Length: 542
Image (cartoon, rainbow, N blue to C red; front, side, top):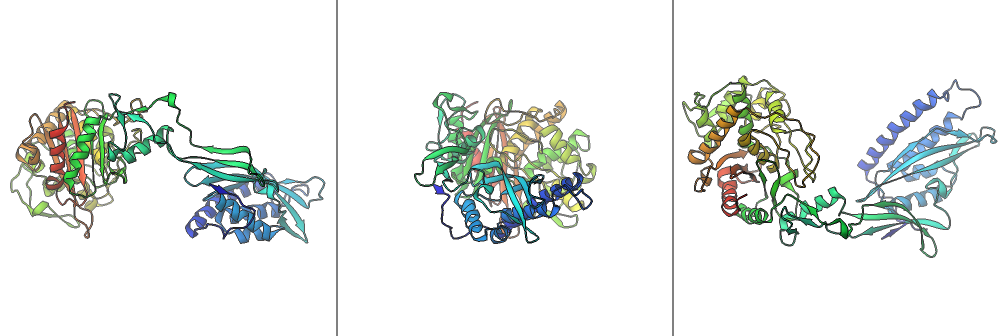
C-alpha cells in the first residue's frame, strides 16, 4: 500500500531517459496547443479581449516540467514553490506514477480580472506502474503579478479533489491466478505443469480474469476513511464465470515438458499444434518460470526456413526436386557463406540440397526470386508477418525485403533479418503439409484477421516428400525410428561470434506439427532432434 503523504518524500523518482521521453510527448502536445491558439485568434494579431498568449505558454511550460520530472523547475513557475515541489513529488512517487502525459487545453480569461487572470484546462494521463493509466481533467489558474505570469498554487490544480482534508492512496491487490482448463476440461496449473506459468499469466491478462489489480482511492487525511474510488484497474475473477477453456492437451503438455529435459539445461522452447485447425496442444519453455520464448521469442529460424524458401521456388517453377543445383563448400555473396561442418555435395539435386540442408545451394538460387518475393510468399501462404490473435501476446514473424545482395543471400537460409519462433515454425510446418494456413490459437474462438491463400496441391506434395526424405535420408534422421509418416527439417542458426549456434528442428506426425529451438544447441539434429524424438515418442495420438 502506498499513500500520498503530507510530508515531502526524498524526491521524485525521475530517470533521465524517462524525463526526456515525457518532455518530448508534452512538447509535441504543446506544439499542437500553440497551433490551436493561433487558429483561434490568440496570436500577436488577436484582439485585445483574448487571453494573453504568454499565460498559455507559461501553463504549457509548467506541465512540460512536471511531466518531465523537473519538479523544482515546475514549482518555480508557481506562487508557492516550496509547497508545490513537495506536493508534486509526493503525488508522483506516492502513487507510483511514471511518464505522465499532460495535455493543455484552450485558455479562458477571467472576465472580471482585467486580463490578469487566466485558466488553462488540461488532461492528465497518469500511468500507474504495473496497473494502467489514470486519466482525469484539471485546471491551472494563472495570475499576472509584476508583469510576469505565474501558476497560482493550490492543491486542486494537481487534481480537483486534492485538498487539505482529502488525499489519494494507491492500493494494490494480489493477482488471482487465472483458472484454466485444457481441451477436455482437465484443470491446468503451473503446479502440475510448471512450463505453463508464464503462459497462464499472459492468459490471465489477455482475458481480464487474472493479472494485477488495484485502485486509486480518495481518503480522509486524518481517519483514512475511503471517500470514493477515483480509478480501478483490472477486474476480479468471478467464480460463476468459470475457467478459461484452452486448446491445450494435458497429455501433450506433460510430454512436452518432459521432452525439454533433453535440452540439457539450455534455454529452449517448443510448440505442438494441430495441422487441420491450428489449435495449440502444448507450449513448453525452459526455464519453466521465465520468458515465454515459444510464443513471443524472436529468433533467426535458420534452415527450418528453407520450407518457406522451397515453397517460393516451387510455386513459380524456378526449380524442381530433381534439378541439379550443386552444393559447394563455400559461396561468397558480400561475405563467405558455408554449410554446417563445411560439407559439400557436388552435383547435388534440389532434393539432396534440402535433405542435407545445403546453404550454398539455396543461396545460389537467390536470383530466381525477386527481392521481396520470399516475404510475399511467407505472408500470403503462411500468414507470417500478419497479425495473429492467439489468445496470449505473440510475436508473429518478420521477413523484411533485403537491403542488399548479402542480406538476400542470408534470408534464403533463414538468417539476416528473418525472425520467427517455435510457434511460427510449427505453423509453417502445418501449412506446408496441409496446404492451408490456420491461425494458431490457444483459446478457441479468438479473432482471426489473417488473409491467406492455399498452396497448390502440387507444391504440397513436393514439400511433404522433401520433409519425409529429410527424416529417412537426411539431417532429421533422429526421427527415423518413429513409426508412421514422419517428416522433418533441421536448422542451425548463427547468433554471433561470441555465441554458439541455435539448434532447430520442426516435424509433423499424425496430424500434429511441432517445432523446437535450443539456444546455443550448436546443431539442430544434435540438440533439438532428441527433444522432438522424446516428444513424439511419448505424445498420444491426436
